[in-house]
Image 1 (cartoon, rainbow, N blue to C red):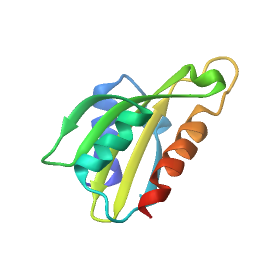
Image 2: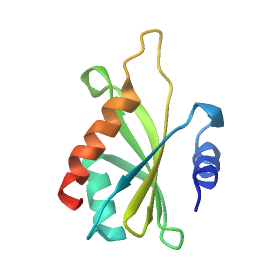
Image 3: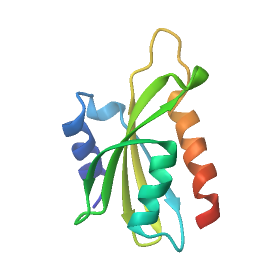
Length: 112
């Protein structure tokens, strides 16, 4: 699955401008689809799962006091996790995406 397909999948779940989705890719090793699920559950709440495509869609909170929700899509492909993340910032930019991505990286550091 390429980045555009992941973005389309995410924008189909939430009403968001596809151009505002931020994409990241992390190198991992020794992580299964079920272990990915366990890591995501530690971070937030899973809304959708597609085992055939190896995709999870989850809500993860970030920003100031972890009060701003993001909708994040994860796609496991070999030794890479592709991430598409969408957030609606308020009047004050809380850098929610960066906060959530940093937390995801921290959780995945054990699998690099």
